Image 1: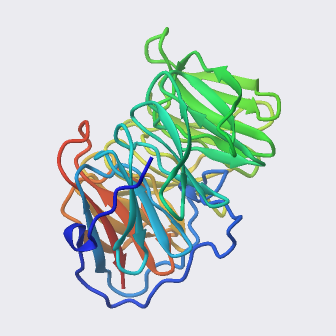
Image 2: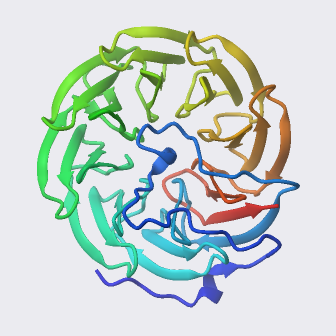
Length: 385
């Protein structure tokens, strides 16, 4: 597919250029860049974070909401929108390099591997796109939309579909190597990978209100273990220190033993947990469905603090050093001290936000737009100090 080129002046609103030009996130072209920062999906970002008061560096407008997180590779920001486009933007200015047009909107955050981007669309297609040119390399068609963000391990591309299957594809060609049925639906849960095993959440279709966490041996494409939860799984697991952390719709945050699937601890929240958990230095950071950000001891599930920052569920947290970054449903970006839970600063974007913030080289990137079937405009904000 030929990329659609547009004059940057029609799409970019350049506000403030007070921060220095950011360096590349990855200088090694063979390095992978993934949703939630790493294969384990811990939400830890490369940073460094912002110093000083937040200011708008640039803002890029799209024709539909941005409900995914961007990635940054070698001075380029890649992000998909519900307007059917995946954009490559200059990191320093937000100007367009190229635009890739898909058959439907993007709900899957892109992944990068050896010069190729991989992202799933609402048309059920997983696209492989040349990161330099924006040209399509191959495509894989699932039976239902792909809202899961891919993971890459030793040439194997792993992604879940709303059809309930987890697919293992050869990254060079898109050839299907294996698929495994979770017997449910995989909504926005992206596989977390550690030591040759992928962990993913699903919502069962045959038992009302049930969810399932499955561990998959990547080499064989077979189930290693699975556990059922009393609520569906609509977020991505995170793996750290031998445990798998995941939230279910019944309001419970679970910690499972990575090797066996045995529950290590669980913590119930009356308002319900909705975000993907972030894990950093033995602590879990997670958003509740009634607008709290919480810090929890990863070893025993003890809640250490909670901050009310939203009227309902905000984004999944991103952690850089001593700050946790999170966006509420009104589009207010918050930086919160990880130790005591006190806000350091806030920045109002003025639009509903759903994607997790990405922090690199003193800049926070966050997408906004009304999260209702892709209606209305979207913006990608670059906020520096």
